Image (cartoon, rainbow, N blue to C red):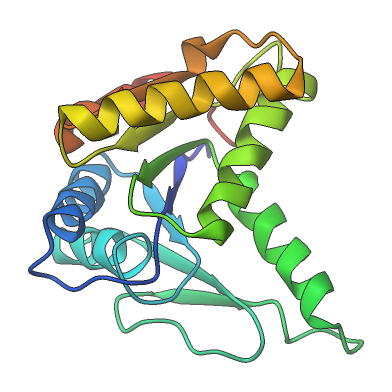
Length: 194
């Protein structure tokens, strides 16, 4: 059976009264209504708790990928614990496993409220769309607070591509203020996992 798995990315900070939290909550709801599985880093905040909470609210299935023995948030149905292996793994190896699980998704929705972990995930999406997924790129939508933040992210992506000195067809990327538009766009362009 084919399944669309969407990784939701963003800060582990933030609470339900934050506008970015509310936007990612809406994303989770929309993904669940379209029968997508929501996978996150399993933690708290805007990028992990909010979309899982939204998906659970609509009866969706959620997966949290944790590391260092940390528990998932209460809205996660299934936890993949990167610390629970047959052989002991260091923090760096667990981080790599966690990143790999998230990047295996069909597509991505990211909050513009980020930290270095989210930026690493974004770099992974950009790199793999260039080198590994070039024939069937995986979509990513970045949801911003307002038009000013949209412009900042557009400039940041252009700068990243310029620094990397690698031309990149960015048709797999959407930057928007609208969580509904972001979720719908990613679902329509998602790479179905068999």
